[in-house]
Image (cartoon, rainbow, N blue to C red; front, side):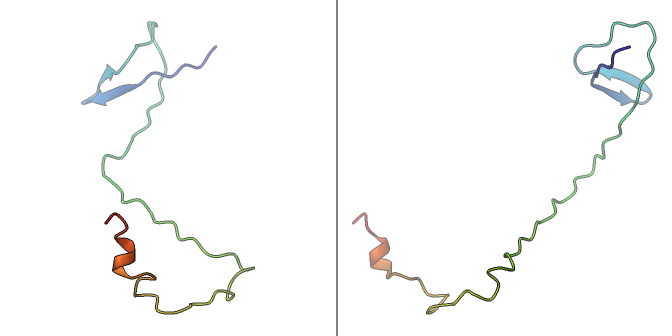
Length: 76
């Protein structure tokens, strides 16, 4: 006995094959129900390694740009 996968949609008790259908007279099937509601992806929060925790320093203003606006306009 070999295991093969076929994709289908079951709508009101009727099966509609999405691609090839199995060439058998009778078969036992396992149905997986996929949720149709959209779930918001969970955000992964990264943490710094404990080896570097507390070793960083803030140098200067963290809000203001590091360079003047004229320095950013290098295409002129």
